[in-house]
Length: 582
Ligand code: F6R
Image (cartoon, rainbow, N blue to C red; front, side, top):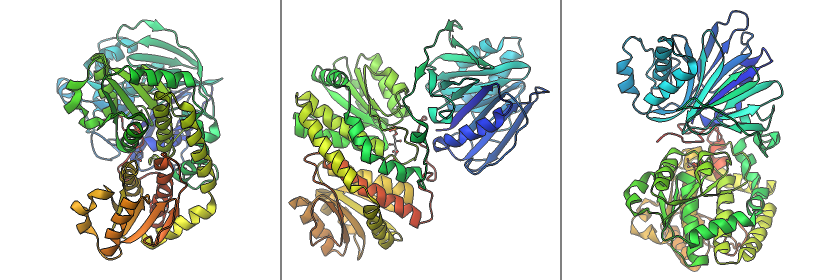
């Protein structure tokens, strides 16, 4: 949710470097963009900003060794040039990722300022400027401003007449990249991965002042200096690029040839720790949003089948109604690709205060959730940049399936099943398979509605199928528990309404026949072909891990539906990859 990026160091092309890095963060927001350069000779602040996607933008910037930039997903204020970041107020130019909840109260107090935009961000810039105007030093001005802010923020600040770039965070990610001649500050590693994989993680309530290629770290509350460890991120440049693939989404779908295996090549010690946490608990909750929530629902079935244990699954935004049941014996299991989703983070922070233990499965290892967790299990899927989550979801399911087997002391059995699943998926994912799915997409691409049914762990996959299809193709797709169909939704079926049937157990087939008798055209997603299916997307038989394989052809279908409808599957309207606001 908004990408922010800063470059400081030797090169006088900092503006172009920021533009290039922001393009790699565009998946975080693509409503508008802006770049600010401190001009080398004059020290003047140069700002360029525009509405629209940054990916196709070509610009020359004035020479300068320091630049900051922003790619926006609008929260406060519409998508206009004025609302785009950076915002300049007095001597302060600033970009921001987060939500300043009490900005209207603070704005009222800053009556000396004439605000140009409707954003909360401009108020932060004014706050800092108001402290500078009282001859307060920049680092202290940042500290004072942070005291006024309720909510989450990651900010990058340039101050006229003061060397360097200042940055601070509370609740939104900021990572410092340590290059040989330049230092970078970004919301995510891909922005600077071409230059360096050596990073310092900025934690909540910390700030940094980058001057040239040097970074000085401080506590945001006390202002005391802190030392940071250099850490090497195990990502390769090509992991974060689409290479010859036309879109990240299809690249990441095909990455699943390897990522399921990678998810289970997991440190046994960590898995045992996670299993112990669950074993010692009295009450456990999966808390997640969107696709990750559907993954958690599938894991609910895995734990019921394998461990004989019921784990509650609650969408993070609904969890407040159940928080009074959270106590020191509770384990909260966060499932998240980004590890930054605000709704989940809040539940974890409050749960932790009540003494609950936190188990987090995230893809981004440096994420806030990973750092908050008592036990963190990385899912090792590599950077996922398409807004629609694909490989992260299947890697999460694989790891949770393995965790269930670990809890009953049979990690080897779980690994065996998953290895064979991974190998079958590797065989399944080939150009012929994709072409066939495209031909199915061609037949249904202009249909307004599409329904999906599934049973047991394929029920959450029916819901997940609907999310995938909705978000990239904008078709009205709805997922249902197969058995629930005749309790209402079947009224929606008309002649030729396309319906995906996940699974081929006798009950689901019987529901499929009910659909067909009302005129639906059925697309089966199952290990075996059945007469009732008009088209059939074969998936391997995965011995309990069926959910993992069954979602993959639907991901491919969603991708091709988007293309056939003339849409960009990597950047669906109104969405952003990492939802760091509530
Ligand atoms: C859909 C999708 C979203 C995310 C949700 C949670 O394809 O990607 O529904 O699953 O926003 O995000 P994470 O997993 O980062 O917490």
